[in-house]
Length: 249
Image (cartoon, rainbow, N blue to C red; front, side, top):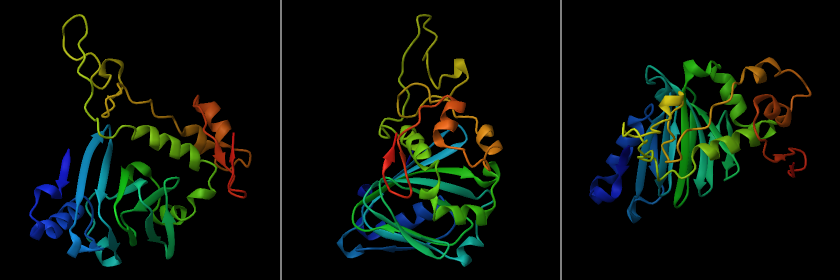
């Protein structure tokens, strides 16, 4: 669903429209635009897959500043966002640490934690939001992990899964194919097989892995992405060694 397209908004109203769209999807924020005098451009889209809300944002440079005061006005069901930077280099501040997010990084932000986030020039981000109650992880745990995701052996496995989920984001309508019985679309969400349709037009979504195995073995020092992939019947991508920065097969 198209949430905002500033091309259809008068230039004098674009700042207010941008702020309304951004704050309507989250807790309140202070938003500072990089060069409002040169014109603000933005396009926000949102859609839902199963129990997940997906959000695609493209815009000129800005920064979102969320303070403790803003957090107190959170919505009834706060979320954790997991994002990919699909254009530009993004800057963030979380848990008192500043860092840069590039195309090979995952950004994780808890709605109940102060933070800063944004980019300079033209940029874009794609995010999955998860209800906090479904995640079942304390706020401070999410915040601490958010600044050291690269040290996790699961980083590249999750990155590959997120990239697969957002493939071809411009084609979100399922293909209208009819079966021989003429009963209508044959594969809308793969509902006949109990699996949802991919909104990007690729038929069924991949079946989400059962992470119970990972939870049971989190303290195992020999737990590796390859071991997890074999247990979950997944294909594991090349993994970056955090000590050398090189990828390993």
